[in-house]
Image (cartoon, rainbow, N blue to C red; front, side, top):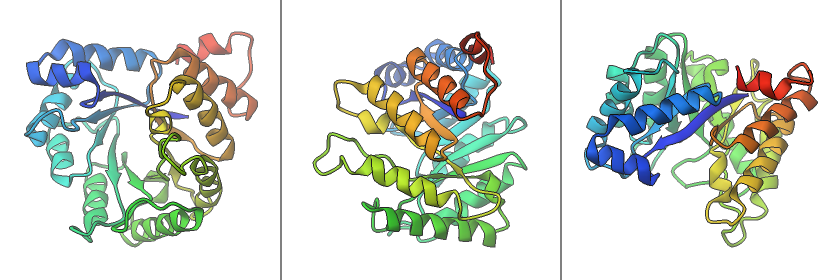
Length: 272
């Protein structure tokens, strides 16, 4: 599975404080720890931690790259913030741009710009797109799949390979009223989205959103990650520092016959 480390995000108190203090060590330590834990990409999200999001994205990218070569996932729904990160990013090992909706009321062509930036980053430039449009986040399976189909069509029209495309069906917190049906909706959508193109787009998700505000966050995340992988997801933005979650990931891949079993498979997974 393509594991995208979630921890360099301004929503976390330690990262928010590090941004305010321009404390490179906190950011670099998180980059190193997530890399050691098995992250394929490191998500970099300023969030609301700074007024000047473009300058802060540049600072985060440069800070990480001083000590870490793990490919980055530049995360913002503001194209100018993504562009600022791209200006200083080393894309030679690949890069993800995260995350564009199909369109916005304020910007009908937002997806076009994200595709162009990802394509301009080289053959290993990839893009995470959200099954969300100017009407918001779909609440049913059919609309999620329909939005995903439009995203795939747009990518193909632009000559952007669907194997470079990640589709995020958008997980909602399970403790929100009337949201408990959403996990099964997500699984049903995953089962359909993976057949929208050949090669199939990758399917990812912001896993921790599911358990936001609950008392059993790690357990909920672990169980749903295994379920999503069994339905065809091959990526997730996750807390790779959660050892139990990573053990479930490794075990699920064994049971799905995606990795070879050995008695020391957990040790082998941790060592990369």
